[in-house]
Length: 283
Image: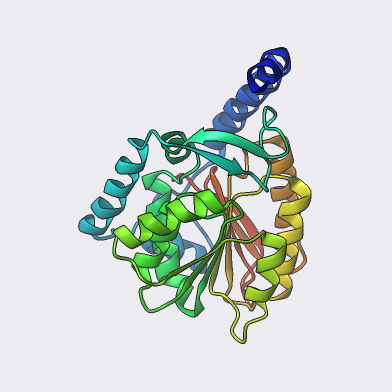
Protein backbone atom coordinates (compact mmCIF):
# COMPACT_ATOMS: atom_id res chain seq x y z
CA UNK A 1 0.00 0.00 0.00
CA UNK A 2 2.78 2.44 0.88
CA UNK A 3 4.49 1.92 -2.51
CA UNK A 4 1.17 2.56 -4.33
CA UNK A 5 0.68 5.83 -2.41
CA UNK A 6 4.18 6.98 -3.30
CA UNK A 7 3.68 6.01 -6.96
CA UNK A 8 0.47 7.99 -7.42
CA UNK A 9 1.96 11.00 -5.58
CA UNK A 10 5.07 11.06 -7.78
CA UNK A 11 4.02 13.95 -10.09
CA UNK A 12 3.09 16.08 -7.05
CA UNK A 13 6.41 15.19 -5.39
CA UNK A 14 8.40 16.25 -8.46
CA UNK A 15 6.45 19.49 -8.72
CA UNK A 16 6.74 20.24 -5.01
CA UNK A 17 10.42 19.44 -4.58
CA UNK A 18 11.36 21.09 -7.88
CA UNK A 19 9.79 24.33 -6.71
CA UNK A 20 11.48 24.07 -3.33
CA UNK A 21 14.85 23.43 -4.96
CA UNK A 22 14.69 26.61 -7.02
CA UNK A 23 13.37 28.60 -4.05
CA UNK A 24 16.31 27.50 -1.88
CA UNK A 25 18.85 28.19 -4.62
CA UNK A 26 17.42 31.68 -5.11
CA UNK A 27 17.52 32.44 -1.38
CA UNK A 28 21.07 31.13 -1.07
CA UNK A 29 22.29 33.29 -3.97
CA UNK A 30 20.54 36.29 -2.45
CA UNK A 31 22.26 35.61 0.86
CA UNK A 32 25.67 35.37 -0.81
CA UNK A 33 25.11 38.73 -2.49
CA UNK A 34 23.77 40.50 0.61
CA UNK A 35 25.89 39.01 3.40
CA UNK A 36 28.81 41.00 4.79
CA UNK A 37 30.90 41.37 7.92
CA UNK A 38 32.48 37.89 7.96
CA UNK A 39 34.95 39.02 10.64
CA UNK A 40 32.86 41.81 12.09
CA UNK A 41 34.46 44.62 10.11
CA UNK A 42 32.07 47.40 9.14
CA UNK A 43 29.42 46.60 11.75
CA UNK A 44 28.43 49.83 13.50
CA UNK A 45 26.72 48.13 16.45
CA UNK A 46 29.31 47.45 19.19
CA UNK A 47 27.19 44.58 20.51
CA UNK A 48 26.90 42.84 17.14
CA UNK A 49 30.53 43.56 16.23
CA UNK A 50 31.67 41.84 19.43
CA UNK A 51 29.33 38.93 18.81
CA UNK A 52 30.48 38.32 15.24
CA UNK A 53 34.19 38.95 15.75
CA UNK A 54 34.54 37.08 19.03
CA UNK A 55 31.67 34.65 19.64
CA UNK A 56 31.03 33.52 16.06
CA UNK A 57 34.72 32.97 15.39
CA UNK A 58 35.61 31.37 18.70
CA UNK A 59 37.37 28.02 18.38
CA UNK A 60 36.04 25.06 20.31
CA UNK A 61 38.08 22.12 21.53
CA UNK A 62 38.98 19.80 18.65
CA UNK A 63 38.63 16.77 20.90
CA UNK A 64 35.06 17.77 21.71
CA UNK A 65 34.22 18.22 18.04
CA UNK A 66 35.83 14.88 17.19
CA UNK A 67 33.78 13.09 19.85
CA UNK A 68 30.47 14.48 18.58
CA UNK A 69 31.36 13.97 14.94
CA UNK A 70 32.30 10.35 15.71
CA UNK A 71 28.78 9.89 17.09
CA UNK A 72 27.40 11.38 13.87
CA UNK A 73 29.52 9.03 11.72
CA UNK A 74 28.28 6.02 13.66
CA UNK A 75 24.66 7.13 13.20
CA UNK A 76 25.26 7.63 9.47
CA UNK A 77 26.35 4.01 9.27
CA UNK A 78 23.28 2.75 11.15
CA UNK A 79 21.02 1.00 8.60
CA UNK A 80 18.21 0.21 11.03
CA UNK A 81 14.74 1.40 10.09
CA UNK A 82 12.45 3.09 12.61
CA UNK A 83 8.89 4.41 12.47
CA UNK A 84 9.16 8.16 12.77
CA UNK A 85 6.15 10.00 14.14
CA UNK A 86 6.61 13.49 12.68
CA UNK A 87 4.64 16.03 14.74
CA UNK A 88 6.22 18.89 12.83
CA UNK A 89 6.10 19.76 9.15
CA UNK A 90 6.11 16.14 8.07
CA UNK A 91 6.50 15.24 4.44
CA UNK A 92 4.20 15.17 1.46
CA UNK A 93 4.61 11.39 1.22
CA UNK A 94 3.94 10.64 4.89
CA UNK A 95 0.71 9.06 6.07
CA UNK A 96 -0.62 10.78 9.20
CA UNK A 97 2.85 12.09 9.99
CA UNK A 98 4.32 8.58 10.23
CA UNK A 99 6.96 7.15 7.92
CA UNK A 100 9.62 4.46 8.01
CA UNK A 101 13.08 6.00 7.86
CA UNK A 102 16.60 4.71 8.13
CA UNK A 103 18.62 6.02 11.04
CA UNK A 104 21.40 6.86 8.59
CA UNK A 105 19.06 9.08 6.59
CA UNK A 106 17.93 10.93 9.71
CA UNK A 107 21.55 11.51 10.66
CA UNK A 108 22.33 12.89 7.20
CA UNK A 109 19.28 15.11 6.77
CA UNK A 110 17.93 16.09 10.19
CA UNK A 111 21.06 16.89 12.20
CA UNK A 112 22.79 20.28 12.07
CA UNK A 113 26.07 20.26 10.10
CA UNK A 114 29.33 20.56 12.03
CA UNK A 115 29.75 24.23 11.02
CA UNK A 116 26.45 25.21 12.62
CA UNK A 117 26.94 22.87 15.55
CA UNK A 118 30.05 24.88 16.41
CA UNK A 119 28.07 28.12 16.14
CA UNK A 120 25.38 26.75 18.48
CA UNK A 121 28.11 25.66 20.87
CA UNK A 122 29.62 29.15 20.96
CA UNK A 123 26.20 30.76 21.43
CA UNK A 124 25.39 28.36 24.27
CA UNK A 125 28.70 29.14 25.93
CA UNK A 126 27.99 32.87 25.74
CA UNK A 127 24.27 32.97 26.51
CA UNK A 128 23.17 29.60 27.91
CA UNK A 129 24.16 30.17 31.53
CA UNK A 130 20.60 30.04 32.87
CA UNK A 131 19.74 27.00 30.78
CA UNK A 132 19.01 25.98 27.21
CA UNK A 133 15.76 24.80 25.65
CA UNK A 134 15.72 22.98 22.31
CA UNK A 135 12.62 22.25 20.26
CA UNK A 136 13.45 19.25 18.09
CA UNK A 137 16.10 16.84 19.36
CA UNK A 138 16.40 14.65 16.26
CA UNK A 139 19.38 12.39 17.06
CA UNK A 140 20.88 14.74 19.64
CA UNK A 141 23.79 16.22 17.64
CA UNK A 142 22.81 19.86 18.22
CA UNK A 143 21.96 19.06 21.86
CA UNK A 144 25.46 17.73 22.41
CA UNK A 145 27.15 20.70 20.77
CA UNK A 146 25.28 23.07 23.07
CA UNK A 147 25.77 20.93 26.18
CA UNK A 148 29.55 20.57 25.98
CA UNK A 149 30.16 24.32 25.99
CA UNK A 150 28.05 25.06 29.07
CA UNK A 151 28.53 21.99 31.25
CA UNK A 152 27.26 23.85 34.31
CA UNK A 153 23.87 24.46 32.70
CA UNK A 154 21.01 22.13 31.88
CA UNK A 155 19.89 21.47 28.30
CA UNK A 156 16.20 20.54 28.02
CA UNK A 157 15.45 19.18 24.57
CA UNK A 158 12.00 18.17 23.32
CA UNK A 159 11.38 15.39 20.81
CA UNK A 160 7.90 14.26 19.79
CA UNK A 161 8.90 10.90 18.30
CA UNK A 162 9.60 8.17 20.86
CA UNK A 163 11.84 6.08 18.59
CA UNK A 164 13.98 9.10 17.67
CA UNK A 165 14.15 10.23 21.31
CA UNK A 166 15.45 6.80 22.35
CA UNK A 167 18.19 6.93 19.73
CA UNK A 168 19.15 10.43 20.88
CA UNK A 169 19.31 9.37 24.53
CA UNK A 170 21.57 6.43 23.62
CA UNK A 171 23.86 8.65 21.53
CA UNK A 172 24.11 11.24 24.31
CA UNK A 173 24.81 8.58 26.93
CA UNK A 174 27.47 6.93 24.76
CA UNK A 175 29.15 10.32 24.32
CA UNK A 176 29.39 10.67 28.11
CA UNK A 177 27.40 13.92 28.26
CA UNK A 178 25.26 14.19 31.40
CA UNK A 179 23.63 17.65 31.37
CA UNK A 180 20.96 16.93 28.72
CA UNK A 181 17.38 15.93 29.50
CA UNK A 182 15.37 14.53 26.57
CA UNK A 183 11.62 15.12 26.94
CA UNK A 184 9.59 12.82 24.69
CA UNK A 185 6.45 14.96 24.39
CA UNK A 186 4.88 17.35 21.93
CA UNK A 187 6.15 20.94 21.90
CA UNK A 188 2.67 22.16 22.85
CA UNK A 189 2.61 19.99 25.97
CA UNK A 190 6.20 20.45 27.11
CA UNK A 191 7.31 23.98 26.18
CA UNK A 192 4.94 25.91 28.52
CA UNK A 193 6.02 23.90 31.56
CA UNK A 194 9.72 24.44 30.76
CA UNK A 195 9.17 28.17 30.29
CA UNK A 196 7.20 28.46 33.54
CA UNK A 197 10.23 27.57 35.62
CA UNK A 198 11.56 30.23 37.98
CA UNK A 199 14.46 31.30 35.74
CA UNK A 200 14.09 32.29 32.08
CA UNK A 201 16.22 30.33 29.58
CA UNK A 202 19.42 31.89 28.32
CA UNK A 203 19.23 30.26 24.88
CA UNK A 204 16.36 28.68 22.95
CA UNK A 205 16.89 26.73 19.72
CA UNK A 206 13.74 26.24 17.61
CA UNK A 207 13.87 23.33 15.18
CA UNK A 208 11.68 20.36 14.36
CA UNK A 209 8.51 22.12 13.16
CA UNK A 210 8.64 24.10 9.95
CA UNK A 211 5.06 25.32 9.69
CA UNK A 212 4.69 29.09 9.79
CA UNK A 213 1.79 29.06 12.24
CA UNK A 214 3.55 26.72 14.67
CA UNK A 215 6.88 28.56 14.52
CA UNK A 216 5.19 31.89 15.26
CA UNK A 217 3.17 30.34 18.11
CA UNK A 218 6.27 28.92 19.78
CA UNK A 219 8.29 32.09 19.23
CA UNK A 220 5.57 34.31 20.70
CA UNK A 221 5.29 32.05 23.75
CA UNK A 222 9.06 32.18 24.22
CA UNK A 223 9.14 35.97 23.76
CA UNK A 224 6.46 36.40 26.43
CA UNK A 225 8.46 34.33 28.91
CA UNK A 226 11.93 35.67 28.12
CA UNK A 227 14.08 38.39 29.60
CA UNK A 228 16.33 40.91 27.87
CA UNK A 229 19.31 38.53 27.82
CA UNK A 230 17.44 35.57 26.31
CA UNK A 231 18.60 34.61 22.80
CA UNK A 232 16.48 32.64 20.33
CA UNK A 233 17.94 30.74 17.36
CA UNK A 234 15.65 29.53 14.57
CA UNK A 235 16.83 26.80 12.22
CA UNK A 236 15.99 26.51 8.49
CA UNK A 237 14.67 30.04 8.06
CA UNK A 238 14.81 29.69 4.26
CA UNK A 239 13.72 26.07 4.02
CA UNK A 240 10.31 27.04 2.56
CA UNK A 241 8.44 30.23 1.68
CA UNK A 242 6.44 29.67 4.88
CA UNK A 243 9.59 29.72 6.97
CA UNK A 244 10.82 32.84 5.20
CA UNK A 245 7.51 34.57 6.00
CA UNK A 246 7.74 33.48 9.63
CA UNK A 247 11.28 34.87 9.87
CA UNK A 248 10.14 38.22 8.47
CA UNK A 249 7.30 38.46 10.99
CA UNK A 250 9.61 37.53 13.87
CA UNK A 251 12.08 40.26 12.88
CA UNK A 252 9.25 42.78 13.22
CA UNK A 253 8.07 41.54 16.63
CA UNK A 254 7.71 44.43 19.08
CA UNK A 255 10.06 42.87 21.62
CA UNK A 256 12.85 42.07 19.12
CA UNK A 257 15.70 44.58 18.90
CA UNK A 258 18.43 42.87 16.84
CA UNK A 259 18.42 39.92 14.46
CA UNK A 260 21.30 38.22 12.65
CA UNK A 261 20.73 36.17 9.51
CA UNK A 262 23.40 33.54 8.71
CA UNK A 263 21.17 31.98 6.03
CA UNK A 264 20.50 28.61 7.60
CA UNK A 265 19.77 30.13 11.00
CA UNK A 266 18.28 33.33 12.32
CA UNK A 267 19.45 34.66 15.70
CA UNK A 268 17.09 36.90 17.69
CA UNK A 269 17.88 39.27 20.56
CA UNK A 270 15.55 41.09 22.94
CA UNK A 271 18.33 43.31 24.33
CA UNK A 272 17.31 46.72 25.61
CA UNK A 273 19.53 49.76 25.23
CA UNK A 274 20.82 48.89 21.75
CA UNK A 275 19.69 50.20 18.36
CA UNK A 276 17.28 47.96 16.50
CA UNK A 277 18.69 46.53 13.30
CA UNK A 278 18.82 43.47 11.06
CA UNK A 279 22.18 42.07 9.96
CA UNK A 280 22.95 39.55 7.23
CA UNK A 281 26.31 38.04 8.18
CA UNK A 282 28.50 35.76 6.05
CA UNK A 283 29.15 32.54 7.96
